[in-house]
Amino acid sequence: MTSLLSHRGPDDQGSLHEPGVAFGHRRLSIIDRTGGHQPIANEDASRFIIFNGEIYNHREIRSYLEGKGHRYRTASDTETILHLVEEDGIDGLNRMNGMWAFAVWDRSRRELLLARDRLGVKPLYYAQVGQALLFASEIKSLLASDLIPRDLDPVALAACLECQYVPGPRTIFKAIKKLPPGQALVADPSGVRLVRYWNPSFVLDPAPAPAEAAARLRDLLSDAVRQRLLAEVPLGAFLSGGMDSSIVVGLMSRISEQPVKTFTVGFQGEGWFDESVEAERVARHFGADHHTLPVGSLDLPAFLEKTIWALDEPMADPACIPTYLMSRFARQEVTVALTGEGGDELFGGYDHFRFERWLGSLGPLGLAAGIAAAALPPGWFSARVRKALEAAALREPDRHLRVRGTLAPDKIRDLLRSRTDGFPRATREALEEAMARYPSTDPINRLLFQDAATWLPDDLLMKVDRMSMLASLEARVPFLDYRVVEFAFSLPGSYKLRGNRTKILLREAFRDLVPAETLRRRKHGFSVPVRRWLRDDLRSYVQDIFASRDDAFYDYLDRQVVQEILSQFYDRGVDCSLPLWTLLGLKVWFRSVFRAASACTGAVR
Image (cartoon, rainbow, N blue to C red; front, side, top):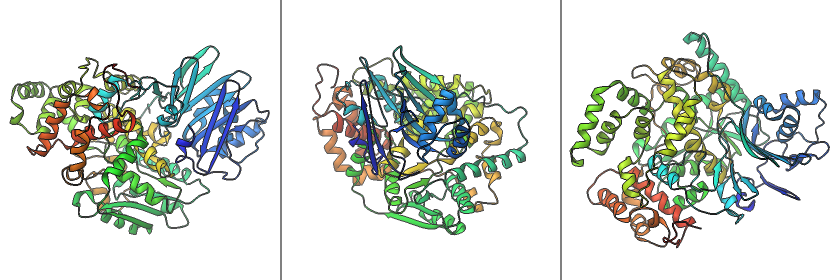
Protein backbone atom coordinates (compact mmCIF):
# COMPACT_ATOMS: atom_id res chain seq x y z
CA MET A 1 0.00 0.00 0.00
CA THR A 2 2.77 2.47 0.87
CA SER A 3 4.94 1.57 -2.11
CA LEU A 4 2.20 2.87 -4.40
CA LEU A 5 2.56 6.24 -2.64
CA SER A 6 6.33 6.50 -3.13
CA HIS A 7 5.87 9.46 -5.49
CA ARG A 8 4.21 11.37 -2.63
CA GLY A 9 7.11 10.58 -0.31
CA PRO A 10 10.39 9.53 -1.98
CA ASP A 11 12.65 10.58 0.91
CA ASP A 12 11.69 8.29 3.79
CA GLN A 13 9.30 5.60 4.91
CA GLY A 14 8.09 4.25 8.23
CA SER A 15 5.46 2.03 9.79
CA LEU A 16 3.79 1.01 13.04
CA HIS A 17 2.38 -2.47 13.60
CA GLU A 18 0.63 -3.65 16.75
CA PRO A 19 -2.53 -5.66 17.50
CA GLY A 20 -5.47 -4.14 15.70
CA VAL A 21 -3.66 -1.26 13.95
CA ALA A 22 -1.08 -0.68 11.22
CA PHE A 23 0.24 2.70 10.06
CA GLY A 24 2.35 3.17 6.93
CA HIS A 25 3.93 6.42 5.80
CA ARG A 26 5.94 7.81 2.88
CA ARG A 27 7.68 11.14 3.45
CA LEU A 28 8.62 14.11 1.31
CA SER A 29 11.02 15.84 3.70
CA ILE A 30 10.35 19.60 3.94
CA ILE A 31 10.59 20.59 7.65
CA ASP A 32 13.04 18.95 10.11
CA ARG A 33 14.40 16.82 7.32
CA THR A 34 16.66 14.77 9.59
CA GLY A 35 14.44 14.43 12.66
CA GLY A 36 10.93 14.21 11.28
CA HIS A 37 10.76 10.46 10.60
CA GLN A 38 7.19 9.13 10.95
CA PRO A 39 5.26 7.69 12.72
CA ILE A 40 6.02 10.05 15.61
CA ALA A 41 5.11 9.22 19.22
CA ASN A 42 4.24 11.51 22.11
CA GLU A 43 6.23 11.56 25.37
CA ASP A 44 4.94 8.26 26.80
CA ALA A 45 4.29 6.56 23.43
CA SER A 46 0.56 6.42 24.15
CA ARG A 47 -0.24 8.21 20.87
CA PHE A 48 1.24 8.02 17.35
CA ILE A 49 0.75 10.19 14.26
CA ILE A 50 1.32 10.03 10.51
CA PHE A 51 0.80 13.22 8.54
CA ASN A 52 0.80 14.62 5.00
CA GLY A 53 0.95 18.41 4.58
CA GLU A 54 2.42 21.45 6.31
CA ILE A 55 1.44 23.48 9.40
CA TYR A 56 2.80 26.94 8.68
CA ASN A 57 2.29 28.35 12.19
CA HIS A 58 3.60 25.29 14.02
CA ARG A 59 6.30 27.27 15.85
CA GLU A 60 3.75 29.57 17.47
CA ILE A 61 1.61 26.57 18.47
CA ARG A 62 4.71 24.84 19.81
CA SER A 63 5.33 27.73 22.22
CA TYR A 64 1.75 27.38 23.49
CA LEU A 65 2.12 23.61 23.97
CA GLU A 66 5.51 23.81 25.67
CA GLY A 67 3.91 26.28 28.06
CA LYS A 68 1.37 23.53 28.84
CA GLY A 69 4.20 21.13 29.69
CA HIS A 70 4.57 19.16 26.46
CA ARG A 71 8.12 17.98 25.69
CA TYR A 72 9.31 17.80 22.08
CA ARG A 73 11.69 15.25 20.59
CA THR A 74 11.83 16.81 17.10
CA ALA A 75 11.58 20.17 15.38
CA SER A 76 8.82 18.98 13.03
CA ASP A 77 5.31 20.34 12.56
CA THR A 78 4.07 16.74 12.71
CA GLU A 79 4.85 16.48 16.41
CA THR A 80 3.00 19.75 17.05
CA ILE A 81 -0.24 18.24 15.68
CA LEU A 82 0.16 15.23 17.97
CA HIS A 83 0.62 17.32 21.13
CA LEU A 84 -2.14 19.74 20.07
CA VAL A 85 -4.66 16.92 19.68
CA GLU A 86 -3.57 15.54 23.04
CA GLU A 87 -4.03 18.95 24.70
CA ASP A 88 -7.13 20.39 22.97
CA GLY A 89 -8.76 17.49 21.10
CA ILE A 90 -10.45 18.09 17.77
CA ASP A 91 -11.11 21.74 18.64
CA GLY A 92 -7.36 22.30 18.59
CA LEU A 93 -7.35 21.94 14.80
CA ASN A 94 -8.78 25.45 14.58
CA ARG A 95 -5.45 26.77 15.89
CA MET A 96 -3.64 25.40 12.85
CA ASN A 97 -2.95 27.27 9.62
CA GLY A 98 -1.91 24.93 6.86
CA MET A 99 -2.90 21.95 4.78
CA TRP A 100 -3.21 18.50 6.25
CA ALA A 101 -4.39 14.94 6.19
CA PHE A 102 -3.35 13.04 9.30
CA ALA A 103 -4.09 10.05 11.49
CA VAL A 104 -3.56 9.86 15.26
CA TRP A 105 -3.76 6.52 17.09
CA ASP A 106 -4.54 6.62 20.82
CA ARG A 107 -3.39 3.31 22.29
CA SER A 108 -5.07 3.61 25.65
CA ARG A 109 -8.49 4.55 24.26
CA ARG A 110 -8.08 2.44 21.13
CA GLU A 111 -9.25 5.50 19.23
CA LEU A 112 -8.29 6.61 15.72
CA LEU A 113 -8.62 10.25 14.65
CA LEU A 114 -8.47 11.17 10.96
CA ALA A 115 -8.68 14.81 9.85
CA ARG A 116 -8.53 16.81 6.63
CA ASP A 117 -7.77 20.52 6.28
CA ARG A 118 -10.48 23.16 6.07
CA LEU A 119 -10.53 23.63 2.27
CA GLY A 120 -9.50 20.15 1.13
CA VAL A 121 -6.03 21.00 -0.16
CA LYS A 122 -4.80 17.55 0.88
CA PRO A 123 -6.81 14.41 0.04
CA LEU A 124 -7.89 11.70 2.46
CA TYR A 125 -9.90 8.58 1.57
CA TYR A 126 -11.35 5.90 3.81
CA ALA A 127 -13.33 2.67 3.57
CA GLN A 128 -15.15 0.52 6.08
CA VAL A 129 -15.09 -3.18 5.24
CA GLY A 130 -16.64 -5.35 7.92
CA GLN A 131 -14.84 -4.51 11.16
CA ALA A 132 -11.88 -2.96 9.31
CA LEU A 133 -11.32 0.75 8.66
CA LEU A 134 -8.75 1.63 6.00
CA PHE A 135 -7.49 5.08 5.00
CA ALA A 136 -4.95 6.55 2.60
CA SER A 137 -3.98 9.66 0.64
CA GLU A 138 -4.85 7.96 -2.66
CA ILE A 139 -7.40 5.37 -3.74
CA LYS A 140 -4.81 3.12 -5.38
CA SER A 141 -3.27 2.52 -1.96
CA LEU A 142 -6.60 1.36 -0.54
CA LEU A 143 -7.24 -0.96 -3.49
CA ALA A 144 -3.79 -2.50 -2.99
CA SER A 145 -4.98 -3.90 0.35
CA ASP A 146 -7.14 -6.40 -1.58
CA LEU A 147 -9.78 -5.93 1.11
CA ILE A 148 -12.03 -3.50 -0.75
CA PRO A 149 -14.56 -4.50 -3.43
CA ARG A 150 -14.27 -2.53 -6.66
CA ASP A 151 -17.98 -2.12 -7.31
CA LEU A 152 -18.71 1.15 -9.12
CA ASP A 153 -21.12 3.76 -7.82
CA PRO A 154 -23.44 4.42 -10.81
CA VAL A 155 -24.50 7.80 -9.41
CA ALA A 156 -20.85 8.84 -9.18
CA LEU A 157 -20.28 7.66 -12.75
CA ALA A 158 -23.18 9.80 -13.96
CA ALA A 159 -21.86 12.80 -12.03
CA CYS A 160 -18.47 12.36 -13.68
CA LEU A 161 -20.13 12.53 -17.09
CA GLU A 162 -21.96 15.67 -16.04
CA CYS A 163 -19.19 17.72 -14.44
CA GLN A 164 -15.93 15.85 -15.24
CA TYR A 165 -15.26 14.84 -11.61
CA VAL A 166 -16.91 12.93 -8.77
CA PRO A 167 -18.32 15.24 -6.06
CA GLY A 168 -17.43 14.31 -2.49
CA PRO A 169 -17.98 12.54 -0.24
CA ARG A 170 -18.53 9.97 -2.99
CA THR A 171 -15.82 8.38 -5.07
CA ILE A 172 -16.22 6.27 -8.17
CA PHE A 173 -16.13 3.19 -5.89
CA LYS A 174 -19.12 2.41 -3.68
CA ALA A 175 -16.98 1.29 -0.76
CA ILE A 176 -14.58 4.27 -0.68
CA LYS A 177 -15.40 7.76 0.57
CA LYS A 178 -13.59 11.09 0.65
CA LEU A 179 -13.28 12.62 4.09
CA PRO A 180 -14.91 16.03 3.50
CA PRO A 181 -12.84 19.20 3.96
CA GLY A 182 -13.06 20.70 7.42
CA GLN A 183 -14.10 17.40 9.01
CA ALA A 184 -12.58 14.75 11.24
CA LEU A 185 -13.39 11.06 11.56
CA VAL A 186 -13.30 9.35 14.95
CA ALA A 187 -13.23 5.55 15.18
CA ASP A 188 -13.31 3.78 18.54
CA PRO A 189 -14.89 0.63 20.00
CA SER A 190 -18.32 2.31 19.86
CA GLY A 191 -18.18 2.89 16.09
CA VAL A 192 -17.27 5.53 13.49
CA ARG A 193 -18.51 9.12 13.40
CA LEU A 194 -17.76 12.31 11.45
CA VAL A 195 -17.22 15.63 13.22
CA ARG A 196 -17.19 19.03 11.51
CA TYR A 197 -14.58 21.18 13.25
CA TRP A 198 -14.59 24.23 10.93
CA ASN A 199 -17.82 26.23 11.08
CA PRO A 200 -17.03 29.78 9.92
CA SER A 201 -19.80 32.35 10.20
CA PHE A 202 -18.72 34.30 7.09
CA VAL A 203 -20.18 37.47 8.61
CA LEU A 204 -18.65 40.94 9.08
CA ASP A 205 -20.99 43.44 10.68
CA PRO A 206 -20.66 46.07 9.51
CA ALA A 207 -18.75 45.33 6.30
CA PRO A 208 -15.64 47.49 5.89
CA ALA A 209 -15.60 50.20 3.23
CA PRO A 210 -13.98 49.11 -0.08
CA ALA A 211 -10.68 50.91 0.58
CA GLU A 212 -10.42 49.41 4.06
CA ALA A 213 -11.33 45.96 2.69
CA ALA A 214 -8.61 46.22 0.02
CA ALA A 215 -5.98 47.12 2.62
CA ARG A 216 -7.11 44.27 4.88
CA LEU A 217 -7.02 41.79 1.98
CA ARG A 218 -3.51 42.89 1.08
CA ASP A 219 -2.32 42.35 4.65
CA LEU A 220 -3.96 38.93 4.93
CA LEU A 221 -2.67 37.61 1.63
CA SER A 222 0.81 39.01 2.27
CA ASP A 223 0.94 37.12 5.56
CA ALA A 224 -0.43 33.99 3.90
CA VAL A 225 2.43 34.09 1.39
CA ARG A 226 4.98 34.82 4.13
CA GLN A 227 3.87 31.79 6.12
CA ARG A 228 4.07 29.56 3.06
CA LEU A 229 7.75 30.36 2.55
CA LEU A 230 8.56 28.11 5.52
CA ALA A 231 10.81 25.34 4.19
CA GLU A 232 14.24 23.74 4.51
CA VAL A 233 14.33 22.95 0.78
CA PRO A 234 14.42 25.05 -2.45
CA LEU A 235 11.16 26.89 -3.07
CA GLY A 236 9.59 28.63 -6.09
CA ALA A 237 6.27 29.46 -7.75
CA PHE A 238 4.13 28.59 -10.76
CA LEU A 239 3.68 31.70 -12.91
CA SER A 240 1.09 31.78 -15.68
CA GLY A 241 1.19 35.53 -16.26
CA GLY A 242 -2.37 35.89 -14.96
CA MET A 243 -3.39 38.06 -12.05
CA ASP A 244 -3.47 35.48 -9.25
CA SER A 245 -0.07 33.85 -9.78
CA SER A 246 1.45 37.29 -10.48
CA ILE A 247 0.21 38.56 -7.11
CA VAL A 248 1.73 35.55 -5.36
CA VAL A 249 5.08 36.01 -7.12
CA GLY A 250 5.01 39.75 -6.43
CA LEU A 251 4.47 39.20 -2.72
CA MET A 252 7.16 36.52 -2.64
CA SER A 253 9.63 38.87 -4.32
CA ARG A 254 9.03 41.52 -1.63
CA ILE A 255 9.69 39.02 1.16
CA SER A 256 12.50 36.90 -0.28
CA GLU A 257 16.10 38.06 -0.19
CA GLN A 258 16.85 36.10 -3.38
CA PRO A 259 15.14 36.23 -6.80
CA VAL A 260 12.06 34.01 -6.80
CA LYS A 261 12.35 30.92 -8.98
CA THR A 262 9.32 30.89 -11.28
CA PHE A 263 8.09 28.30 -13.76
CA THR A 264 5.68 28.25 -16.70
CA VAL A 265 4.71 26.00 -19.60
CA GLY A 266 4.39 27.39 -23.12
CA PHE A 267 2.55 25.56 -25.90
CA GLN A 268 4.55 26.56 -28.95
CA GLY A 269 2.56 27.75 -31.94
CA GLU A 270 -0.76 27.52 -30.07
CA GLY A 271 -1.61 31.23 -29.82
CA TRP A 272 -4.23 31.64 -27.10
CA PHE A 273 -2.94 28.54 -25.30
CA ASP A 274 0.62 29.87 -24.95
CA GLU A 275 0.98 32.16 -21.92
CA SER A 276 4.77 32.08 -21.79
CA VAL A 277 5.21 35.62 -23.15
CA GLU A 278 2.95 37.11 -20.44
CA ALA A 279 4.64 35.02 -17.74
CA GLU A 280 8.10 36.15 -18.85
CA ARG A 281 6.95 39.79 -18.81
CA VAL A 282 5.73 39.46 -15.22
CA ALA A 283 8.90 37.62 -14.20
CA ARG A 284 11.04 40.48 -15.54
CA HIS A 285 8.91 42.99 -13.65
CA PHE A 286 9.65 41.22 -10.37
CA GLY A 287 13.25 40.29 -11.17
CA ALA A 288 12.44 36.58 -10.89
CA ASP A 289 14.72 33.70 -11.86
CA HIS A 290 12.32 32.51 -14.53
CA HIS A 291 12.18 29.13 -16.28
CA THR A 292 9.97 28.36 -19.30
CA LEU A 293 9.24 24.85 -20.55
CA PRO A 294 8.48 25.13 -24.28
CA VAL A 295 6.14 22.32 -25.30
CA GLY A 296 6.01 21.28 -28.92
CA SER A 297 4.99 17.73 -29.70
CA LEU A 298 3.98 15.42 -26.86
CA ASP A 299 3.45 11.71 -26.47
CA LEU A 300 -0.12 12.52 -25.51
CA PRO A 301 -1.37 8.93 -25.05
CA ALA A 302 1.44 8.26 -22.57
CA PHE A 303 0.80 11.46 -20.62
CA LEU A 304 -2.95 10.86 -20.64
CA GLU A 305 -2.53 7.35 -19.24
CA LYS A 306 0.01 8.48 -16.64
CA THR A 307 -2.10 11.34 -15.31
CA ILE A 308 -5.29 9.26 -15.18
CA TRP A 309 -3.40 6.56 -13.27
CA ALA A 310 -2.32 9.23 -10.78
CA LEU A 311 -5.87 10.60 -10.37
CA ASP A 312 -7.39 7.19 -9.47
CA GLU A 313 -10.80 8.41 -10.61
CA PRO A 314 -12.05 9.35 -14.10
CA MET A 315 -11.55 13.10 -13.60
CA ALA A 316 -11.51 14.67 -17.06
CA ASP A 317 -9.75 18.00 -16.49
CA PRO A 318 -7.55 18.59 -19.57
CA ALA A 319 -5.25 20.87 -17.54
CA CYS A 320 -3.89 17.81 -15.71
CA ILE A 321 -1.30 17.28 -18.43
CA PRO A 322 0.26 20.78 -18.38
CA THR A 323 0.04 20.85 -14.57
CA TYR A 324 2.07 17.65 -14.43
CA LEU A 325 4.50 18.92 -17.07
CA MET A 326 5.11 22.11 -15.08
CA SER A 327 5.41 20.22 -11.79
CA ARG A 328 7.97 17.83 -13.24
CA PHE A 329 9.85 20.75 -14.78
CA ALA A 330 9.87 22.76 -11.53
CA ARG A 331 10.98 19.71 -9.51
CA GLN A 332 14.35 19.90 -11.23
CA GLU A 333 14.99 23.13 -9.32
CA VAL A 334 12.69 23.21 -6.26
CA THR A 335 10.79 20.93 -3.88
CA VAL A 336 8.00 23.39 -3.00
CA ALA A 337 6.02 25.68 -5.33
CA LEU A 338 3.42 28.32 -4.48
CA THR A 339 0.44 28.57 -6.84
CA GLY A 340 -2.45 30.98 -7.51
CA GLU A 341 -5.35 28.54 -7.14
CA GLY A 342 -8.40 29.87 -5.32
CA GLY A 343 -8.35 33.50 -6.44
CA ASP A 344 -11.10 33.03 -9.03
CA GLU A 345 -13.44 31.20 -6.66
CA LEU A 346 -13.04 33.81 -3.91
CA PHE A 347 -13.17 36.97 -6.03
CA GLY A 348 -15.22 36.06 -9.11
CA GLY A 349 -12.71 35.53 -11.89
CA TYR A 350 -14.50 33.05 -14.14
CA ASP A 351 -16.62 34.14 -17.08
CA HIS A 352 -19.34 31.70 -16.11
CA PHE A 353 -20.05 33.68 -12.93
CA ARG A 354 -21.06 36.74 -14.97
CA PHE A 355 -22.89 34.54 -17.46
CA GLU A 356 -24.93 32.82 -14.75
CA ARG A 357 -25.90 36.17 -13.24
CA TRP A 358 -27.08 37.36 -16.64
CA LEU A 359 -29.08 34.20 -17.24
CA GLY A 360 -30.70 34.55 -13.83
CA SER A 361 -31.74 38.10 -14.65
CA LEU A 362 -33.80 36.95 -17.67
CA GLY A 363 -36.58 35.56 -15.46
CA PRO A 364 -39.68 34.44 -17.42
CA LEU A 365 -37.98 35.36 -20.70
CA GLY A 366 -35.24 32.82 -20.03
CA LEU A 367 -37.80 30.16 -19.21
CA ALA A 368 -39.68 30.81 -22.45
CA ALA A 369 -36.48 30.74 -24.50
CA GLY A 370 -35.43 27.45 -22.93
CA ILE A 371 -38.80 25.83 -23.62
CA ALA A 372 -38.75 27.03 -27.23
CA ALA A 373 -35.20 25.77 -27.75
CA ALA A 374 -36.11 22.34 -26.41
CA ALA A 375 -38.88 22.05 -29.00
CA LEU A 376 -36.59 22.79 -31.96
CA PRO A 377 -34.35 20.27 -33.77
CA PRO A 378 -30.70 20.11 -32.58
CA GLY A 379 -29.38 21.62 -35.81
CA TRP A 380 -31.06 24.96 -35.20
CA PHE A 381 -28.46 26.08 -32.68
CA SER A 382 -24.81 25.51 -31.96
CA ALA A 383 -24.08 23.31 -28.94
CA ARG A 384 -22.98 26.37 -26.96
CA VAL A 385 -26.13 28.37 -27.69
CA ARG A 386 -28.38 25.42 -26.93
CA LYS A 387 -26.60 24.88 -23.62
CA ALA A 388 -27.11 28.54 -22.69
CA LEU A 389 -30.82 28.39 -23.56
CA GLU A 390 -31.26 25.20 -21.54
CA ALA A 391 -29.57 26.85 -18.54
CA ALA A 392 -31.74 29.97 -18.85
CA ALA A 393 -34.86 27.89 -18.24
CA LEU A 394 -33.52 26.48 -14.97
CA ARG A 395 -33.27 27.70 -11.40
CA GLU A 396 -30.40 27.24 -8.98
CA PRO A 397 -28.68 24.90 -8.43
CA ASP A 398 -29.68 23.28 -11.74
CA ARG A 399 -28.66 26.37 -13.71
CA HIS A 400 -25.19 26.24 -12.18
CA LEU A 401 -24.90 22.53 -12.97
CA ARG A 402 -25.92 23.07 -16.59
CA VAL A 403 -23.56 26.02 -17.15
CA ARG A 404 -20.71 24.15 -15.46
CA GLY A 405 -21.67 20.79 -16.91
CA THR A 406 -20.14 18.99 -19.88
CA LEU A 407 -23.03 16.80 -21.00
CA ALA A 408 -26.76 17.59 -20.81
CA PRO A 409 -28.89 15.41 -18.50
CA ASP A 410 -30.75 13.80 -21.39
CA LYS A 411 -27.46 12.87 -23.12
CA ILE A 412 -26.14 11.34 -19.89
CA ARG A 413 -29.28 9.23 -19.53
CA ASP A 414 -28.81 8.03 -23.11
CA LEU A 415 -25.17 7.16 -22.43
CA LEU A 416 -25.77 5.18 -19.26
CA ARG A 417 -26.82 1.62 -19.93
CA SER A 418 -28.42 1.40 -16.50
CA ARG A 419 -30.72 4.36 -17.38
CA THR A 420 -30.52 5.30 -13.71
CA ASP A 421 -33.07 7.82 -12.51
CA GLY A 422 -30.67 8.87 -9.76
CA PHE A 423 -28.26 10.66 -12.08
CA PRO A 424 -28.52 14.21 -10.67
CA ARG A 425 -28.16 13.27 -7.01
CA ALA A 426 -24.40 13.45 -6.49
CA THR A 427 -23.90 16.94 -7.86
CA ARG A 428 -27.12 18.33 -6.43
CA GLU A 429 -26.49 16.76 -3.02
CA ALA A 430 -23.01 18.26 -2.86
CA LEU A 431 -24.24 21.73 -3.82
CA GLU A 432 -27.26 21.67 -1.54
CA GLU A 433 -25.23 20.45 1.44
CA ALA A 434 -22.66 23.19 0.86
CA MET A 435 -25.22 25.96 0.49
CA ALA A 436 -27.02 24.85 3.65
CA ARG A 437 -23.84 25.73 5.56
CA TYR A 438 -23.45 29.18 3.98
CA PRO A 439 -25.65 31.77 5.71
CA SER A 440 -25.22 34.63 3.23
CA THR A 441 -28.18 35.76 1.12
CA ASP A 442 -25.86 37.74 -1.17
CA PRO A 443 -26.55 36.25 -4.65
CA ILE A 444 -22.99 36.80 -5.92
CA ASN A 445 -21.37 35.24 -2.87
CA ARG A 446 -23.71 32.28 -3.03
CA LEU A 447 -22.78 31.79 -6.67
CA LEU A 448 -19.06 31.88 -5.85
CA PHE A 449 -19.48 29.58 -2.87
CA GLN A 450 -21.00 26.87 -5.05
CA ASP A 451 -17.69 26.49 -6.85
CA ALA A 452 -15.57 26.99 -3.73
CA ALA A 453 -17.36 24.20 -1.89
CA THR A 454 -17.55 21.62 -4.70
CA TRP A 455 -15.44 22.12 -7.82
CA LEU A 456 -12.53 23.64 -5.90
CA PRO A 457 -11.77 20.65 -3.60
CA ASP A 458 -12.98 17.86 -5.87
CA ASP A 459 -11.47 19.00 -9.18
CA LEU A 460 -9.06 21.91 -8.98
CA LEU A 461 -7.24 21.08 -5.74
CA MET A 462 -7.35 17.36 -6.47
CA LYS A 463 -5.70 18.00 -9.82
CA VAL A 464 -2.99 20.22 -8.34
CA ASP A 465 -2.24 17.79 -5.50
CA ARG A 466 -2.10 14.69 -7.70
CA MET A 467 -0.09 16.22 -10.53
CA SER A 468 2.41 17.96 -8.24
CA MET A 469 2.84 14.95 -5.97
CA LEU A 470 3.24 12.70 -9.00
CA ALA A 471 6.41 14.74 -9.56
CA SER A 472 7.25 14.66 -5.79
CA LEU A 473 6.64 18.41 -5.60
CA GLU A 474 4.67 20.10 -2.82
CA ALA A 475 2.21 22.77 -4.01
CA ARG A 476 1.07 25.50 -1.60
CA VAL A 477 -1.96 27.73 -2.13
CA PRO A 478 -1.82 31.06 -0.22
CA PHE A 479 -5.20 32.27 -1.58
CA LEU A 480 -6.77 29.41 0.40
CA ASP A 481 -5.36 30.48 3.73
CA TYR A 482 -8.52 30.10 5.84
CA ARG A 483 -8.26 33.72 7.03
CA VAL A 484 -8.37 34.96 3.43
CA VAL A 485 -11.30 32.66 2.63
CA GLU A 486 -13.34 33.72 5.66
CA PHE A 487 -12.68 37.39 4.93
CA ALA A 488 -13.53 37.09 1.22
CA PHE A 489 -16.87 35.36 1.81
CA SER A 490 -17.82 37.89 4.48
CA LEU A 491 -17.60 40.84 2.06
CA PRO A 492 -20.44 42.05 -0.19
CA GLY A 493 -20.52 40.36 -3.59
CA SER A 494 -20.49 43.77 -5.23
CA TYR A 495 -16.88 44.16 -4.05
CA LYS A 496 -15.98 41.32 -6.43
CA LEU A 497 -18.36 41.38 -9.40
CA ARG A 498 -20.21 44.39 -10.78
CA GLY A 499 -21.44 44.67 -14.35
CA ASN A 500 -18.65 43.42 -16.62
CA ARG A 501 -15.98 44.02 -13.98
CA THR A 502 -14.47 41.03 -12.21
CA LYS A 503 -12.16 40.66 -9.20
CA ILE A 504 -12.73 44.32 -8.36
CA LEU A 505 -11.37 44.18 -4.81
CA LEU A 506 -8.36 42.04 -5.75
CA ARG A 507 -7.36 44.44 -8.51
CA GLU A 508 -7.66 47.39 -6.15
CA ALA A 509 -5.67 45.72 -3.39
CA PHE A 510 -2.67 44.99 -5.64
CA ARG A 511 -2.80 47.71 -8.29
CA ASP A 512 0.57 49.13 -7.19
CA LEU A 513 2.23 45.69 -7.09
CA VAL A 514 1.21 43.93 -10.30
CA PRO A 515 1.83 45.38 -13.80
CA ALA A 516 -1.17 47.30 -15.12
CA GLU A 517 -1.38 45.19 -18.29
CA THR A 518 -1.59 42.04 -16.13
CA LEU A 519 -4.49 43.48 -14.14
CA ARG A 520 -6.27 44.34 -17.39
CA ARG A 521 -5.85 40.89 -18.95
CA ARG A 522 -8.94 38.84 -19.63
CA LYS A 523 -9.24 35.73 -17.47
CA HIS A 524 -7.31 32.99 -19.25
CA GLY A 525 -7.10 29.89 -17.07
CA PHE A 526 -4.74 26.99 -17.63
CA SER A 527 -6.07 26.23 -21.13
CA VAL A 528 -4.91 23.48 -23.44
CA PRO A 529 -5.68 22.89 -27.14
CA VAL A 530 -8.07 19.99 -26.52
CA ARG A 531 -9.87 20.24 -29.87
CA ARG A 532 -6.64 20.11 -31.88
CA TRP A 533 -5.22 17.34 -29.72
CA LEU A 534 -8.30 15.19 -30.34
CA ARG A 535 -8.50 15.99 -34.04
CA ASP A 536 -4.79 15.57 -34.83
CA ASP A 537 -2.39 14.16 -32.24
CA LEU A 538 -4.82 11.73 -30.62
CA ARG A 539 -7.03 10.80 -33.57
CA SER A 540 -5.73 7.29 -34.21
CA TYR A 541 -5.41 6.63 -30.47
CA VAL A 542 -9.04 7.68 -29.92
CA GLN A 543 -10.29 5.46 -32.74
CA ASP A 544 -8.33 2.45 -31.48
CA ILE A 545 -9.25 2.79 -27.83
CA PHE A 546 -12.98 3.23 -28.44
CA ALA A 547 -12.97 0.27 -30.81
CA SER A 548 -11.49 -1.92 -28.07
CA ARG A 549 -13.81 -4.02 -25.90
CA ASP A 550 -11.21 -5.49 -23.54
CA ASP A 551 -12.46 -3.54 -20.53
CA ALA A 552 -15.77 -2.78 -18.78
CA PHE A 553 -16.44 0.58 -20.43
CA TYR A 554 -19.28 -0.67 -22.63
CA ASP A 555 -20.74 -2.61 -19.71
CA TYR A 556 -21.77 0.77 -18.34
CA LEU A 557 -22.03 3.06 -21.38
CA ASP A 558 -24.05 2.62 -24.56
CA ARG A 559 -21.71 1.90 -27.44
CA GLN A 560 -24.05 3.36 -30.07
CA VAL A 561 -24.37 6.69 -28.24
CA VAL A 562 -20.59 6.88 -27.79
CA GLN A 563 -20.08 6.24 -31.49
CA GLU A 564 -22.58 8.97 -32.33
CA ILE A 565 -20.51 11.50 -30.35
CA LEU A 566 -17.36 10.33 -32.16
CA SER A 567 -19.12 10.73 -35.49
CA GLN A 568 -20.33 14.22 -34.63
CA PHE A 569 -16.81 15.33 -33.84
CA TYR A 570 -14.79 13.59 -36.56
CA ASP A 571 -17.28 13.31 -39.44
CA ARG A 572 -19.64 16.28 -39.04
CA GLY A 573 -17.34 18.89 -37.50
CA VAL A 574 -19.45 19.45 -34.38
CA ASP A 575 -17.31 20.86 -31.58
CA CYS A 576 -18.09 18.38 -28.82
CA SER A 577 -14.45 18.18 -27.77
CA LEU A 578 -15.06 18.42 -24.02
CA PRO A 579 -17.69 15.65 -23.94
CA LEU A 580 -15.38 13.52 -26.09
CA TRP A 581 -12.42 14.27 -23.80
CA THR A 582 -14.56 13.22 -20.83
CA LEU A 583 -15.44 9.92 -22.49
CA LEU A 584 -11.81 9.37 -23.51
CA GLY A 585 -10.62 9.87 -19.94
CA LEU A 586 -13.29 7.47 -18.73
CA LYS A 587 -12.28 4.83 -21.32
CA VAL A 588 -8.60 5.12 -20.38
CA TRP A 589 -9.55 4.81 -16.71
CA PHE A 590 -11.59 1.65 -17.34
CA ARG A 591 -8.68 0.13 -19.26
CA SER A 592 -6.32 0.79 -16.36
CA VAL A 593 -8.67 -0.49 -13.64
CA PHE A 594 -11.21 -2.91 -15.14
CA ARG A 595 -9.83 -4.85 -18.03
CA ALA A 596 -11.97 -7.75 -19.23
CA ALA A 597 -14.71 -7.16 -16.64
CA SER A 598 -17.82 -9.26 -16.68
CA ALA A 599 -20.98 -7.51 -17.86
CA CYS A 600 -23.40 -10.16 -16.64
CA THR A 601 -23.06 -9.59 -12.89
CA GLY A 602 -23.54 -5.84 -12.93
CA ALA A 603 -20.64 -5.55 -10.46
CA VAL A 604 -16.99 -5.29 -11.31
CA ARG A 605 -14.32 -6.74 -9.04
